[in-house]
Image 1: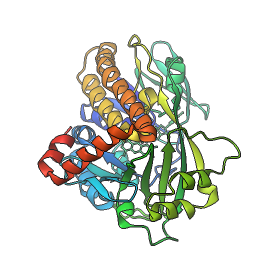
Image 2 (image 1 turned 90 degrees about the horizontal axis):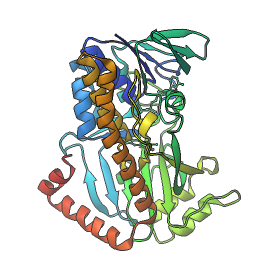
Image 3 (image 1 turned 180 degrees about the horizontal axis):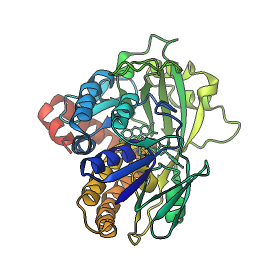
Length: 391
Ligand SMILES: Cc1cc2nc3c(=O)[nH]c(=O)nc-3n(C[C@H](O)[C@H](O)[C@H](O)COP(=O)(O)OP(=O)(O)OC[C@H]3O[C@@H](n4cnc5c(N)ncnc54)[C@H](O)[C@@H]3O)c2cc1C
């Protein structure tokens, strides 16, 4: 059986490793021209589900490299802070099986040892005895099973399940970037890890460090075409963005009582980096009949970034799909088992992340206070923290 995976992102590459381990013939087709195209320096939080999937699917050497580098280049976990930058809770890599991985390094770890055909922009497929893939460069390839792992704007999904897709999450956000090579005053709590600001009022801010592509990964690969920066995204109740709105002034007005450092970050972010974010979330559709075409990750259940679990759910898909397809037997029946399970947890994660996006922007003040108390208590009691974040 020959399996084609369209999309060499986190989910597609993990799946390819899992299938390879099971002795299945698999090829990944990726639109990027090379393994260093469009590298993103964001750190990604890998939770126990994602870590278990990577451990199971990757060859031992790749997994060891992931573990070695996740702590070292990946920064220091994920934090919850008040609007005055008081620490509520830090989810650190010491909490078992939580990792903070550099996307650059993770991508290198995932690419090693796989047959990835770069420069292959998938356009459509046609079905006969097998499945024929048609690429933008005019070439075709055939396979027995097609997996669309081509992200939020998936072309495989567009053809296979045209009624699926994404819709506006109804949460407007304003985002910007502060270049860290020009500003050395930023508190280290904001530069060593990603953070969510949990204020008392009906608003939220997410901040994540972009390492810049001047970092060296475990094998000494050096990328130097981008500057390090701190990305921030602000959302609030009643925030509507429209042409002509002074986005920076709007954020500064709404965070007038927040920490001076947060205001300074917004005030010093160059104009051209400040933009509106339209947060999207997958449309929840009814179950469909399984076939020799299937989907994983953002291609089927794209979710708002407010729970930070999209990549982890994509990894979970990869693990499950590798298990069922690697187990032999009828591929359509195997895909049916995968889709039954994936549909349940995948769309549950979509709903959960949508709720989190709405709470992030417009949290009920009472619920906020309870949430902060829970975070503070967990921070003070390591055993509770471990128990809370174990799954
Ligand atoms: C700011 C931000 C922070 C986030 N933080 C986290 C986090 O901490 N933890 C977490 O779990 N998730 C996080 N996420 C979500 C996570 O990044 C995604 O859910 C995850 O990358 C999805 O993986 P995927 O493999 O499904 O798709 P992708 O990673 O998007 O990969 C899709 C691949 O398909 C390729 N492709 C697309 N179209 C074609 C085509 N036509 N032909 C061939 N190839 C194609 C693309 O080039 C890409 O390589 C975050 C998202 C954002 C925006």
